[in-house]
Length: 238
Image (tube, rainbow, N blue to C red; front, side):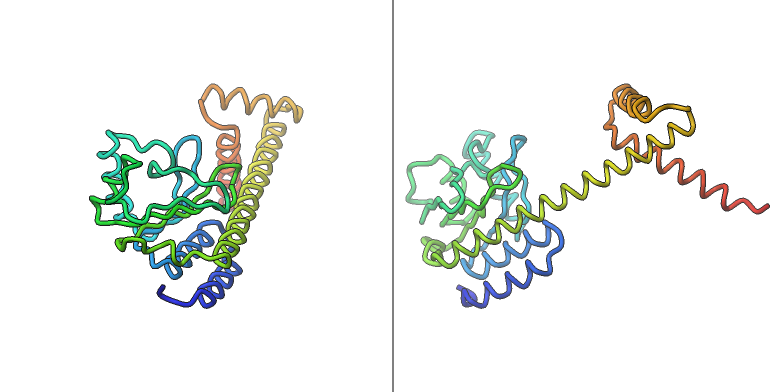
């Protein structure tokens, strides 16, 4: 363990207080895991229907090497979780002390080829109703599980809930911005084409379908064009 758990917890809580966005909070959680578990590769992973989304990782090159080795070991696919590992429920964990001695999983050989030995996957609270895991790897056999404790589990749970709240806040901000843009675009169309609010929205939907784009994207383009035209008029010297 690089630092005391208490010191790492104090830093994590301070970092989370100063983290206004999900990406910074995710980075703070990965740093905390590095401090506590002395993991050489640490990834915070959101498991979506379209595949894994790495919210933060401490060594992208090492992760790419691991994924390539796993794909070769599994014949081109990882399956299961982000790296083919079982996905533990929030608060639970999955571990392999030494992949060289493991005969249960085909991917163990792929991990071993990268020089990594111990694997620990911790389940965190879901985000967007999808599983989130903290994936830890160490070149030292059995070098991860000893650092796990009830205190660390509680901190990870609280941090995971914080990630969920930040994600919800960011999604709400995007939704409000999108609604504002669409409302502004409706107003522009109502003024230009003499449409009602409902007709303007129907117009936006029809054109977006014809152009194979989102209504929000079309609305933003319309608003930016209108703002550009207004700026150009203001710049004209009488």
